[in-house]
Every structure is written in structure tokens, then in C-alpha cells.
Image (cartoon, rainbow, N blue to C red; front, side, top):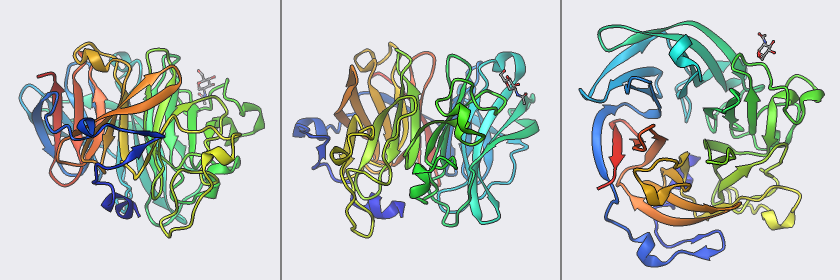
Amino acid sequence: MMFLGLSVTHTLALVTGTLAIPSQQLNTRQQPFKSTAITSHAEPWAIAFLPDSRVLVTERRGNLRLVDQAKKTQGSITGVPAVAYAGQGGLHDVALHPKYAENSIVYISYAETGTGGAGGAVARAKLTLDANGGGALSGLEVIWRHSQRATGGLQFACRLLFGSDGALWISAGEINQMTPAQSMTGNLGKMIKLYENGTAFADNPFASQGAVQSQIWSLGHRNPLGIDWDAQGRLWEVEMGPQGGDELNLIERGANYGWPLVCEGKHYDGRTIPKHSTRPDFAAPKAFWVPVISPAGLIIYKGDLFSSWKGNAIIASLGTQGLVRATISGDTAKEAQRISMGKRIRGIREDKDGAIWVIEDGNNGRLLKLTPN
Ligand SMILES: *[C@@H]1O[C@H](CO)[C@@H](O)[C@H](O)[C@H]1NC(C)=O
């Protein structure tokens, strides 16, 4: 499914939101950064920084890798559970507990197989590092699961992000089931807010309605692959649309983002979908892309190294083979720049020193550290 969308995305002639982008911005070939290759990985998916400057990298087949950025070496972390490596599924995100320095707890998201197909799961475990550049997970405990499984192996998403209040956020994809994204009796196509132990957060908008509903912060999402905070503490999200209609959303408490009832794109079989403008009761994207950019990750840049990018959304893009930068002003956003990197970019994270790290998609996906020229 995804490849149908991607095959038409490598074009620079497009319209973003309602604004045409001046052609000289789209044709940016010169990269505004120095790119340092650290390691190479088999289908890497996500990056997390350890306090000591080492980096965790997930590989979709189920390998968790520990990267020493100074030595440019990597080791293996054992104890990852069996993952459903098929379609888009496998080992997905990794995130550190907010008190990792004290408790060494990490969280992983992954696709798992069961009755009816595959679904996403989130687990936490203690990470013990050894003296040989590797380590092990122990005491693994699954704290969240998709409420339904499906065949096809598509659109798990399940990015993980902690908030300043200690909450764990999960961007749960709709595993290509569409209408369940609107159903309040399941957690497909939802933004999920939990305590670090997996219990639903007390202030969630539907907390009084029951077990699954109580996890839900927002609904009507399709394939939400990137989430990050801005400096004001607002949550932004990127999600892949079908044929057209990738979105950058500002996530509001209890809001419904409309999938699959409204979308700026259309179905892969050509069927049209009503536009957001027909249903003002649904939250509309702050920026959207037709044709798609296939957003796979998101940061809202907060550092000083790339000072002119402060507050901008930097999107890891599979379809454009690079980064897409959007400016945010109040609660509006618009595309400002595309930076070609010649490879599908799968993940992006900002380190505490303001360096931007990305990972390329595919079999020899490089982990790259980006610093200003
Ligand atoms: C999970 O954490 C919350 C908040 O600290 C607490 O209220 C709840 O009892 C915990 N649940 C379990 C099962 O430990």
C-alpha cells in the first residue's frame, strides 16, 4: 500500500496546504548542514539518546543496537521479544523513562502476532549495559496493546514520547482498518496517554467512559508516525495519508481528526474522500501534502545549533528522500524548505546539544549526525 503512495511522491512540483512554494526553495540541493555517518543498520526505525551520549537504534527485524558515537561502533542488546516482522511491522520505537538515570527503564514499541493477525504493543524493561559495548533487557512487561489485530501488516505507527508531567504518549496507528479510528470502543487510530506503568492518565478526556476509552486523548488518526512537543508544551503530530493528504496536526484534548471520514487525499483505488472543509467539526491539519511526502518522524526544533530553525517542525520524509521543514506561527504551519538527502529518511531526533540525528530507511540505513556547516 505504502509504495503506491511513494511512487508518486518524488516530485518537487506540488502545492502545500493552500500555498504554492517558490521553486527556488524546493530546488534546494545544497545541504545546510554537515552530515557525519556514525553506523549502518538493517532497516533501522528509531533513535534514542542515552545520558552518556551513546545511542539506541531499533532495527525492524527485532534488533536493538547500542551505538558508541565516538568510536562509531555498535553492539547488541538482548532480550527484545519476538516481533511480527512483516509488511511495515517489526520493532519500532524506543524511548527512555523520564527517570532513566535512576531506574534504567526503557520502553519499546513493536508489532506482535496473535489471533487475527498483528497489532502494536508497548513494553518496558530494565536495560543493563555491559562492558563490551552491548547489554540486555530484563523484566520485560507489556503495558499496552492495540485492542484489535489485523492481517496485512500495515500502519502500526506507535511512536513513544514522554511529557513533562511524566505521561507516556503512544501514537497508535489504525493498522489499515480505517473506520475503527472513529470507534470509541477500540484504540486504533488514537493518541494514547498513559502513566509510565500503562494505566490510563487520570485527566484523559474520556476517562469516565471505561477501560479502552480512558486511554484516548484524540481520535481519527491514520498512520501517525511522528510526535513532538513545541517549546510551549503543545503536542504536534505528523501522519501519513492515503493517496495524498499527509498531515501536520496540532493535537488537542479530545479532538477528532476525521480519518477516514475526511481527508485531503483519496483512497488508493481512486475513491474520493470528503475534504476537511466539509466537516468543520473535525480538527483540520495545520499543513497537508498532496502529493504525499510520506512523513516518518518529527521533531520541533528547540536547540541553538540551527538557530534559524528554532520552533520549526522538521519532518523525516520517506517520499521526498530528505527532510521537510515547516514553520509554525501561533497555531498555523506552512512548509518552508525541502532538503534532499538522496535517501528515504525513516527517523529523526534532536540531541540535547542541538545536533539533529536522522536514520536512513532500508537495508544499509545509516545513522547520521547533522551539525551546521
Ligand atoms: C500506575 O500509576 C498511577 C500513577 O502513579 C497509579 O495511580 C496507579 O495505581 C498505578 N497502577 C498500577 C497498576 O500500579
